[in-house]
Image (cartoon, rainbow, N blue to C red):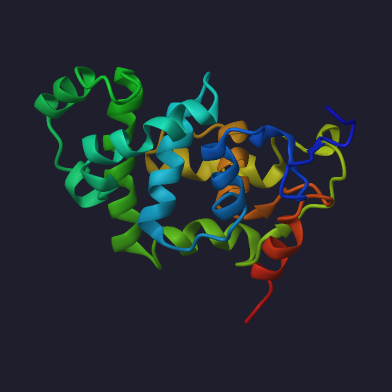
Length: 204
């Protein structure tokens, strides 16, 4: 792999190293990762999936994402907040997801926390985006060694999420989440998606 962390592809587009050549991973890199997401439910889903990823690779979760969505009621926080111990048992028997009891229970607690944030303030999306003043942080890394794994902002968000009732929201998980949902544009500068994602972060 080049020192830059960029991989050349047959279509002539250089991409961040982590996408490799897996078609599913490449499509995710090109269409989702780094695109600013401002839908509160979609942000909840991604935060939960990043929590399930802990200790695993993202491609493992990505391949199971549709199974997760089906098992967790389309990641509808209102539905998940009503889950009971019977639902926990159902999910622990569902081979389509990562069967980790603590993470399943944390997903339910997170749904209830999401509802409290929605009902008591401007909503979950503004709650998160306010930490970056509503605009993505624009990264300038030119090699994979320059990419950070956590930042003061991810530490602050993780602390705030934990205070609200979320779990599996440490600073490294939160930073990966921020990268994925476009709160920070961490495509390498030479990646063909860096410029387009930077443009999406500009005010209308």
